[in-house]
Image: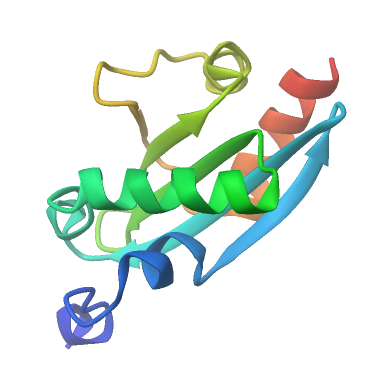
Length: 127
């Protein structure tokens, strides 16, 4: 039942990256943070190339400096972040982790954009 409720196959790339997204001004930088819930992160990352293309298009159109997609596995209460744009160093500092060569970063135990993603990003961008 959870799998059906988080079915991403019928969603467009834009619906996945921008359907639940908010823009934040952090240290004079425009940061867009989208979040998508799933029961299988592969459902998101099997489409990574297309999602990155859409994130870059939206960034160019809307002037986002950094675009992050937080893909949250609602069964495991873990997330994986997908990054495009500038400020990789600040994103890495925020979570004390490195982006891998696929522009991704594991965020174990992270499920809340409001409580667990925005505060460390704010500290990194404004600190």
